[in-house]
Length: 216
Image (cartoon, rainbow, N blue to C red; front, side, top):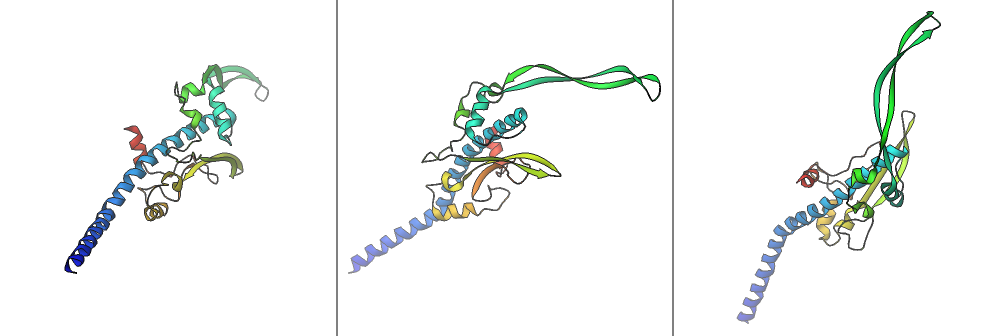
């Protein structure tokens, strides 16, 4: 009986030690996985933003779906212009004399491929919709719209993915805590996104640490 009790005590001690170890290392491992995966997602969202801004420059609005955006990258071109000042004399009826008129002239110099400008020889834009590390091939959701600001209808867009998709295999308690995060050093809320459908903004909800990681 004494031997059995000792064995049970040892098992209890080992289990208790494991729980303590896991409570310390679990959040550390979670943070490492989270930051690595979030960095990949943020990089993809930046590609989406750059592509959407190019689309808006040429079309005056944002693309509402990835197929349209990818086709644009394949075939779209920027128009290169140059602005210069000029002047000429024009007869003014009110004064009855010739007056100097100053104008700005815009010259078209040529065009440049959107694909070459944004991605050069890299074809990663063809998978803009795919969420990195997603286990079931999940896609980013993306929408475009117009919002009225001071009497002007401004084009807006938003692309996002839920944290559940990115951290699908992580402990549920830590994932729930992450989704409720409210801090300047964290990605706040249940999703990672860029842009907005209610405000004129192309910012993302990630902290500066993910911009620094990309530069490295």
